[in-house]
Length: 361
Image (cartoon, rainbow, N blue to C red; front, side, top):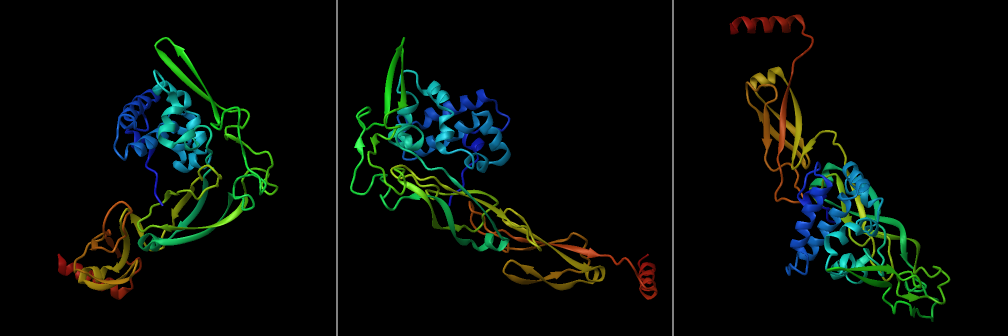
């Protein structure tokens, strides 16, 4: 399960950046990581990442949802196809002059049809699942098994959409390409546009005898058990389990977006890898010193409170915190000494304190 990076971080811009600044920065990064220019193994993944970030941040509505709710606000409302479709004009403007335009660029990275971002190949929609974990789960990690109600491949036709014993027919209008292209020459630039084939609706083939169970869709509503790991050190946020969203036979599955909420703990507060605990001691114990047993996430630990300890004295228990997904080792537990001052004193106690005061002068 991997977490998406912040879109602003991906592009190297701030939340206050204007649309023009975002577009300028995207063009700079896109030209750097375009697979035609950059032959490194990571270039394609970088290009997809920055293009997705730009597709969201360049759209006013999507950017507002992202600013308010993070990845879940966008992933829970739009499919990847919807996200990229809205930015087609900008991509064509940035890359289209003198070349193949939006579709040819994304075909080179995602494969034919853009892997769900163009035509021909569909991508299933993502599914949002919400769960909560304890601070102990953050320490140790946790394996989860859930049953999802989603679109699954039709077992009657094995996802083909055809009645058993029959096959699809190649579309004669587009020769199985799923799209019709037109090239227009305008001065020194050529523009390539592509549109879904109207005969086969972009699939490249036609089902003449549909499956009776799925009505030719190749998919139907069903349930599936999905197992995934909550890694140690997890924070509240959205995490992706790839390919476990709604299924699309012949295309690519959507993702399962797991929205994790770390529950507040009854004893501890967490800040990154470190945890904090308040230990009450009496003013007498703080003055004379004492030993106390404090809880940790794995049991208890005995600590020494030195004589003369002042309120808010901090005692560190090294390595008793939690880990973090992107870093090594565990944090620490910090115990804050809270000195309790009695609100009511009997006559004997008052006399003792007055005697102590007089001897202290």
